[in-house]
Image 1 (cartoon, rainbow, N blue to C red):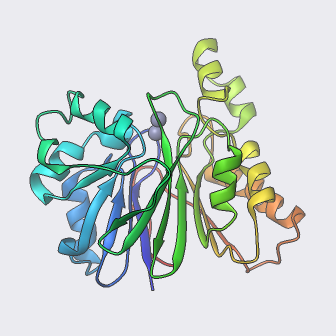
Image 2: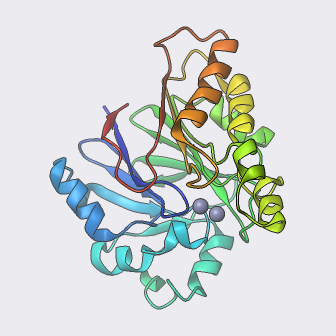
Length: 264
Ligand SMILES: [Zn+2]
Ligand SMILES: [Zn+2]
C-alpha cells in the first residue's frame, strides 16, 4: 500500500510525499524541512526511506527549501537537464545542490531505487516545467502542477494513472472580478500560466477511466478560488462522464497546512 500527503499546495509552497513502507519520494521542496520532519514523525514515516526529491520547475514556491533539504536531509535531487542547469545557477540552490544533482534522461524511465520515474513537459512560464509519471509497487501515480493547459502527452499519462494530482488553480469569474492587474490576469489565464477549475474539469472528463481511483486537486489559488468551487467543477465533470459515485475519490489539497495521509 502506498501513502501520499501534501505538506502545502499553492503559491505559498508545494511539497508532496509518495511512499510505501520501505521506499518513498518527495516531489518539490517548497515547504520547510522542519514541517516535513514533523509530519514524518507524526505518521511513523522513516525519513531514511526517502530516495530523492523530484523537482517540477524552478519557481520559488517549488524550490524555496530545496537547499535546506539537501543540507539537512542529504537526499539526491532528480530533475531534467534543463531544470538542473537552472537550479545550479539559482541563488536559492546553487551553493548546496552540487553533490546532489541527478538528471532524468529525456523520454526514458529513470529507476530511483526501485521507483520508476518519467517526466513530461507541460506549458508554464518557467524555463521548463514538467509533470511526473511515477510507478511504485505497481501503482501509477501522475502529478501535474502549474500547467497552463493539459497537453495530449500529459493526457496520455493521466489516462493510465491510478492516482492523479492535477492543478485546479482558479475560478474564471473570481479571477476576472478580482484585484489582480490586467497583465497578471492575462499571465494566469493564458496557456502558459495556470489551469482553471473549468479547464481541469474538462481535462478530467477525457482522462477518467476505470482504473482511476484518486484525484487530488492541487495548487488552488488563495484569491481566485475556493475548495468548494474547485471540487464542484470537477465533481460535476465526473458525473457528466458517467462516473458512479464512490468509484473515484476526488479531494482538494489544502493550501497552507498538511493534508491528511491518504492510503492509495
Ligand atoms: Zn507553483
Ligand atoms: Zn510555477
